[in-house]
Length: 290
Ligand SMILES: Nc1ncnc2c1ncn2[C@@H]1O[C@H](COP(=O)(O)OP(=O)(O)OP(=O)(O)O)[C@@H](O)[C@H]1O
Image 1 (cartoon, rainbow, N blue to C red):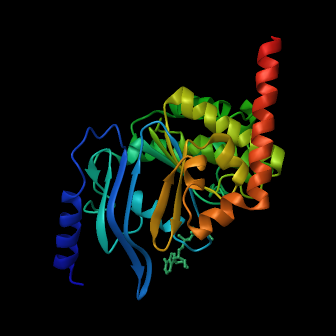
Image 2: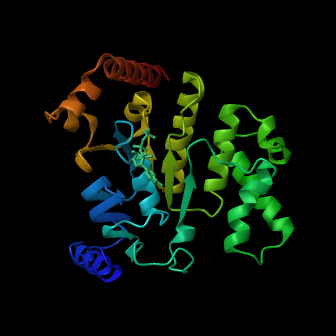
């Protein structure tokens, strides 16, 4: 497809995005197609992310969850389609062009992706220096310390290198960096992968708490069924190159797509659901007793 054709398709898709108050849906995607050569990952995919929600993104391995995230943050130019973030067109913008939204999101990539030669504080300061080069070092240090503590790390973790941290601490440090710019939108790619169940549950708890207190909207790629039950408001399912369903888990269970049935009705999902229900019952008992 020529560059002109590509632009025409994108412009056409953009017209299909209804003109609503952008704050209701910080992310709106219409007709997204991503392909690598002849291999099509997404085909005419639509998705709306609601303000204030934690949206879980699930799908089999290779269904394009990470590619979808990369498209939204402008790291993967789609072959067709429109992606609006806070009402700004991401697809048409050049990667370095200042379009006023890049500082409004934070990203935690798969594996944390901390710079190994920088301390945690210096890692947190990377986006700050990029967007606010005029900030003096004293203020940078203060902001980094605050973000470190915000994510539940001890203050002395700020001076440590990633190699000196446990897996769970590294995830928190990555989260601290993702929160450096006080974003409204947070993208997380499998944040609890590799954590033990207790560490994963604590990370989930932290994420829910931060989402509610900071008013975040969260795009969360995960394979972790406990995470889906514990903290996601809705779940979007990627299959057949599209978002085939989106809703709460009970709503998804109403659909008869085989992957959804297998995923949410399988033994692992039932165990996660039961554990979640037990947790809620215990919370209720504790609440009544106090
Ligand atoms: N830069 C690239 N070049 C070629 N193919 C790519 C590229 N990036 C991703 N792909 C392919 O696109 C498909 C979707 O990849 P993606 O990483 O988004 O999957 P995923 O759903 O996140 O998978 P997983 O759950 O295993 O992490 C895969 O088949 C992958 O090999």
